[in-house]
Amino acid sequence: MKILALDTSAKVSSVSVVTEDRVLAEFSAHLNLTHSQTIMPMCEQLLSCCQIPLEEIDAFAVSRGPGSFTGLRIGISAVKGMAYALGKPCIAVSTLDALSFNGRQFEGILCCVMDARCNQVYNALYESNHTSLTKLTEDRALFIDELSQELKERQKPVLLIGDGAELCYNKLNGILPDLVLAPENNRYQRASSVGLVALEKAKQGEFISPSQLIPQYLRLPQAQRERMKKLEEQK
Image (cartoon, rainbow, N blue to C red):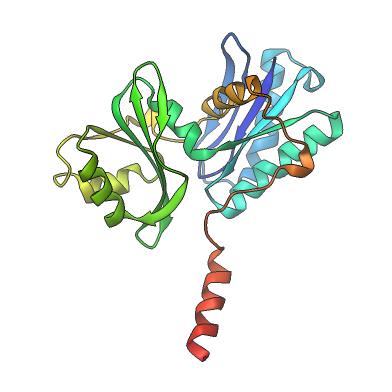
């Protein structure tokens, strides 16, 4: 099985082709460009380098969220378009589940965090023992202080992964005794990790149609939150 995987959930644009045997290729770019400018040219160039026609892709995987509202829509729209045109299935992957695959060699708690602003993060916790990952929480949005308290109670080494990792490290270093910041090459979203999670889902038959592929935001867009706040103040 060949899976084309995309991640546009944060600032990094990333595409990858994975099979049951290995990660065939991966392109990632951390640029000041919108994903609409980069993601489709990257897909085209990646497939060209692999000498794989788009028609030979068996399924399309994408980070469904949490993440940037605009970024998620761009990646999901790209996958929906390709999958629909070819009559191929999709696989929706939690951005946080994919991030956890970046830290599988760590023994302890994997704390996947994405900056949600306003002193909040999108987060999920996983326990890793080198050979397996166990998800300990649902995907959620919470304040960093709440996350700090929960990590204290678990009393295990913690690896911070994600675009919110440095933010959390700066706030929690010295408060948590065994806190590790993931190295930059493995800290951010990677399409290969999306693809590896998708392979596990494919084994379980967790395919969906393009029409079923929707983002998972975890909280309302900022404009809608501000509108609701103004309505509350007017009451």
